[in-house]
Length: 564
Image 1: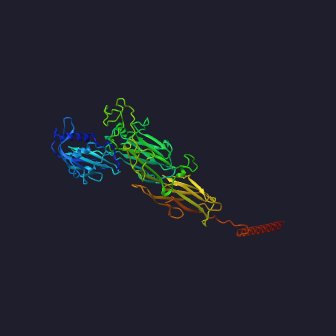
Image 2: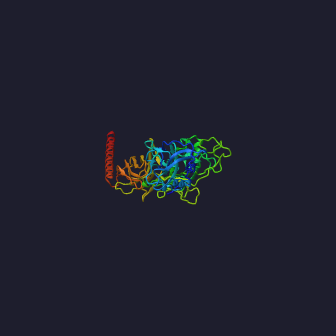
Image 3: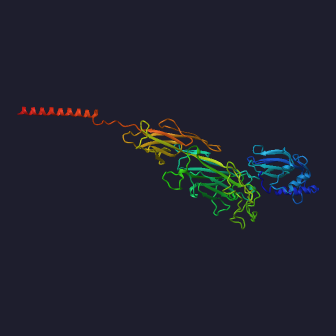
């Protein structure tokens, strides 16, 4: 089990030394025994198991050290263990020390996540509290109880999530933050990274925080300018980028193809500057990234459009946070942090000789030591002295889905028909917007694939009609999809349909994201050919006209003779 070094607090160390003095009877200012409680934050992510090591009369010696008189073995000591065994075990205890041999299998109480937030009715004495954050990490906390005691986590149970929003362009609606969404290729998709800091940040000298965001290959992310509309906040207040990389007043950002990181070398100091309580504070990063490209002919960013995944595979984005989890890590070695009036006791502009102090960076695992589904915990480099200074969250995953509509142009016999052209429009808030993303294929250029579509209303218009065929009326159709939205570890596309096309409705292929339909052209009115009935009619009519002309001519001649 992975533990962390240097657990024993100064109070515990003084307690141990003072207890030895107490064994000689040198007790001063002894307080009468009474009833106390141990409590933890109600929103803690850890559990705390309580064991009673010693009971007695707690007081102070002339130097202010905690001491205990009339020490007796606590109720949870293991069989055969004595007061002397406790003193010997804890005298040299470190955070790596396993103190479980001191206690039995039945604890006094368990408080914290999933349990009560406090244990009352405790006698004065010396207690062992074992913290477990549920991530294969534990810490031993030694506490003198001569008053009500609040336990502050030693493991820094930071929580983290990545989310995105969904939109329906036709309806003009946009969702809250969720896990799955569908978007058009070319859209700027909004994402959010959010960490809730643990309740004990103020116990640290400085607090390191890093967001690592792995963006799907189909997104246009190659440099800082590709991260659109970036905002970074803590407690609702905006954080600016560091003027100097590695500084303690803001964040550093690094972007490479399909990945970016935001590092806060000391988020505690940032919070102090902004007058935000760092304990339980929310650190929120919001940005947008372009899905693919909005033109099939675009050459920018290589083949981003070709990397877009359609259907259930989706475009997967994962992220995790790396954070400080050792309150005793010396982030500002050699710097006196007590010469200013900063209530959080971190360097700021009022400090003498430590302006622009760069905090020492704890081991953050590096780019090659990222969590995954099989290995959610990092920091396995045993040779690194700072190995136990940071922890990492598990990967959080979101997915962006997008679809294709494939139109097959056929004749009345449903055979491929060449010579047609189509334009597809999307209803965007009442305005038709042309979809230029189309690939024409098939032996007779009869297959029209409109790609990178999401849900909404569309209109298909035939803009060129095959010779000898009637132009079809515009076809209005709607694409609908159902996918996981909230609390999904791996968001899934559930179904895909279209209504208003030739077959109504059409069930799309969830695996490929394709909605396919045949569009039929009917032949126009048949024109008569030479020798046909029409020609005979023409001849017949022509013959009649000639006869009438002859009659008229004869009548005219007769009239002329009469006049003569």
